[in-house]
Length: 258
Image (tube, rainbow, N blue to C red; front, side, top):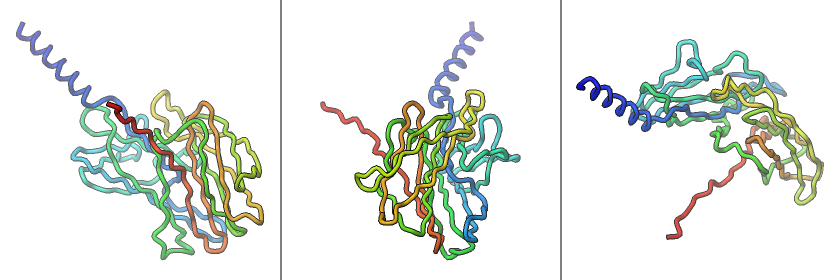
């Protein structure tokens, strides 16, 4: 009888602990791979990814099965580290960063991250440009609009799209109320990792052409069934200045009427 009570108490403790630490990992999209990449017009883009652990617990950075780097990445409480590219077979820019607390259970870790890029060849004096890193909640179906894209005759404009699975989106480019063009874009290359959290998203790029008399564009993209996210990069061919335009969709807050 005593052993039965002990076993029952242990099972209750396990159930309470598991309820306090639900199974799962934190998932964050890193849209541009950290590292150094040669670009157009002599540019050398250097991108760095910082991860901060603000909690009192150890945080593990991992992929779907094992730690991201060969030696593993464990973040001590209240520390900051830089991370490189975690996968050797990434088919395109961008990957999903996975985090969990190192407490015996798979519980999403509350980390803070920053991704920044600069042209070290032409603008080494710059502190760089921050690139947003959306959570899976920021991927959405329906229409996403980027209302104001700066445009001129000496900048390259590129839309970068990311999805949680292979899909097709429709992209529309406007000059004010005038529809300039419609493009159908296929996002491919996702890795479902056997039903686990994906290692990298489906992806597509689209060059946005600019009429000579236009200084601002609006770009919209649709997804019917598969959640997607995207941002626009504007790169000046003269100065290599790099501007990011990302969507900001308000989250609904339910207010009590009582």
